[in-house]
Length: 433
Image 1 (cartoon, rainbow, N blue to C red):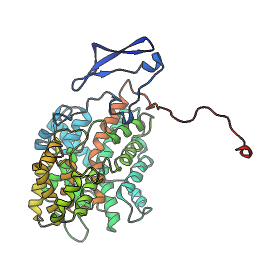
Image 2 (tube, rainbow, N blue to C red; image 1 turned 180 degrees about the vertical axis):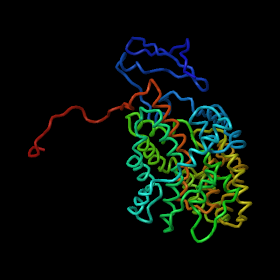
Image 3 (spheres, rainbow, N blue to C red; image 1 turned 90 degrees about the horizontal axis):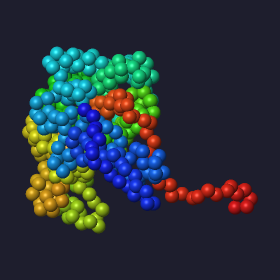
Image 4 (spheres, rainbow, N blue to C red; image 1 turned 180 degrees about the horizontal axis):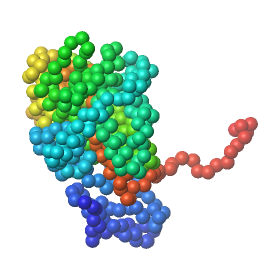
């Protein structure tokens, strides 16, 4: 699929001169004004902080319609994939563009499964970190260091090396995240098991100990698989744009993914579900909810309910419905409805779905709200929420990176600026200042 130029055009009139700008037509979404030649022809460029009104690339991977509450991976609705697919099948879809045949899926699963171990010397990296280091700090360092170990998959101009790097990162990120978790606990690392599923293997590496057997619950395994699938890609968000920008310089794929992890760490991005759980813990008990609801409704309080509403989705988050089902299943299985934090979450959910204030402002529980509840119930500390997000998003980053490498229009990223600093001035010797 390619973008097509329409018969429409936009005309910019500047100082009495007209500049015709082509209008491009995507397969879905609004038309796009092409301003690539504007600076060369008119000596002017546009101002768009955050690039919220600027398309930085062409992409065939993910489409979001915030008004309709729609998320499509390669054209497939996320609800259908969450109901019928698995995370590894979605990984194949995002990487290669179509759902796999049975044979293709079996081959892909085998390739990922057999790359889950990391180089044994990488274990020594963890000893250089303090035990109380945030797992994301550890992951940024270790993933970036993968380029020091896997020299046979650094050539971005070699399609086969790009393929090997992609499989390695999808396979090894769960292992690295689990190692970061185990290191923070002072427990021994648990090696991956080829007999387990992708999500089941991650849970096993996080919660198993050598002294006794650990059996992965099918309900928790399914919930983890859904969390990974629902977070696999989300269009040109901050971390994905970071990966593309880093990749545009020709940086190796491990460095690019490490850059994405660093960006994801920000509380306004990947840290949202962690912030949500921290808010629930601050509230503490159901009887304090009215106090915080009043704060949320008071514009002058400075308090904001985390995990409600979404910047992109204006009516509802299509991922949240799926996550709610998983949350109910997990809480039912574990029988921990008496947990005060989870009681607060359930009561907040009820209020948000029924209170006229929240309904009118479309402050519905989003995917971060439910995923945080699930991860808390599974026994993960809040510090592991963002690393799990990073595992999930790895395939999206790699798919976007591979697409960028193959894009004939791709150039090294170089945003412009609106300079408002001093004009030219001459140096004054320190004695005369």
